[in-house]
Amino acid sequence: MMSVPGLPAEERCLVMGVVNVTPDSFSDGGLWFDEEAAVRHGLELAEQGADLVDVGGESTRPGAARVSLEEELARVVPVIRRLSAAGVVVSVDTMRAEVAQAAVEAGASLVNDVSGGLADPDMPRVVAASGVPYVVMHWRGHSHDMDKRAVYSDVVAEVREELAKRVAMVLAEGVSERQVVLDPGLGFAKTAEHNWALLAGLDKLRELGFPLLIGASRKRFLGRLLAGPDGQPRPFSQSDAATAAVTALAAHAGAWCVRVHEVPANADAVRVAAAWKRAQVAP
Ligand code: PMM
Image (cartoon, protein in one colour):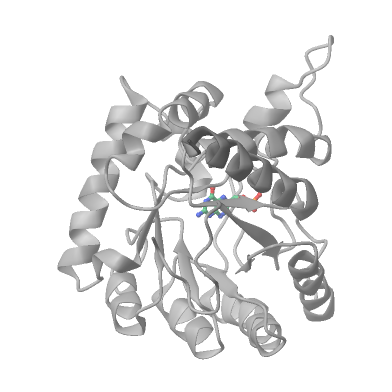
């Protein structure tokens, strides 16, 4: 079982709450953009039952442009320092090695790299030296044009194969097997059909032998599923119940962690899944 410094090894799926310190993230852009609001929100997520809080300073919503290194550092480092000082277990959502390094120095316990080491060639080496867990997400390129890369003939097999290649690369750079967490990257160069296929195929991804993190929360494919009779997608802010349903199913399918914007229902959902599983294995 993967262990994160500061977290007890749990017999249930972990809940990662999200704090996007950005003006433009898909579902909560602008809400926690100033330092005080971001820290307050992180503390609130922890109180609501988040096992860890993921702090990010760069939006990855489809079409998003990149922010500068200086801007990203200024957004995330003070928030990470204050949340870790308050005893919250923090992860940093970044594709940049310098940001990962500064975040770990400020107290972050995990590096969440949506590019899986592809965006910044220094990232695996920095993560290897830090020794913290490393989320390697499936990624095919930056957000500004990722939708055009959503082309697969067998999405589960191809994501699995591409993740296996990422793992081989980060291990070759010195990252230890014990640090690696994998993520299929729902919505990143994936259509709704691809996302559902990956969720239904989690057992195939688990065969790679690493813990899995799943980020379905408030993504477009849930809004589309819940479209009204007029065909209009449900607004992301009204897809939290669907997110919790995905959490219960993903946790039951063996996910190690779910990344979510609204914590309470998801914290309940992982407990439901754990009780269900315990009852299945009990004599
Ligand atoms: N999704 C987003 C951002 N970071 N990290 C991981 N590991 N997995 C994800 O699916 C993921 C992520 C985009 O979501 P947001 O901008 O709505 O928070």
